[in-house]
Image (cartoon, rainbow, N blue to C red; front, top):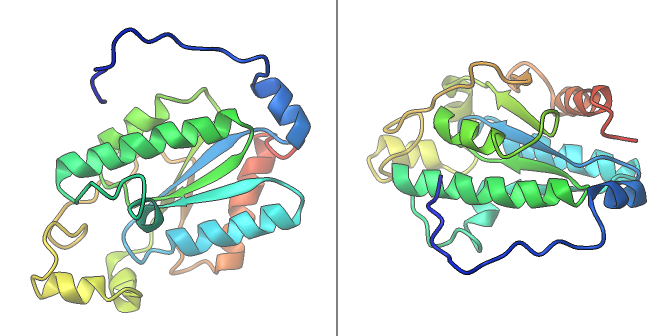
Length: 202
């Protein structure tokens, strides 16, 4: 992870802790980390799960890979080093959301296993759920909702995951979703079921 460069800094604690925030929200914070190839359905499932939880009276939020690159991470490209920093930053942001009692879905290709493991290490047991959206590359490429595979095959996008850059699948994810076989609704049910089993929904 990143080197600590700032000096002469001291952590400033508050009067309210996670327990109080979770009591206010009547839920427990969690990070659901969706990882998979471009076009696998990560964002589609994440926003549908967010909507379902909000409809049920829970506070949820989606951190989407493309959206975050419009702001917080707009100075990062797609080199291996930039991908690692991209995931490091999002891990820290997701940790803050979790501490605030929010259920946060992160939708990032996050291709490197070591980067995801570093993020997992930031969290207490039960606060981080790695979800492998395992849809195969043939299905993802057939969908190609953003036209990225077509551009990557034409050599217009360098370092494109699954084509000219690697994707390291999770070895022991908490949940596997293949949206080539499961509908969005079925995927959302599986995600929420996982949260309920962990006691995150009150």
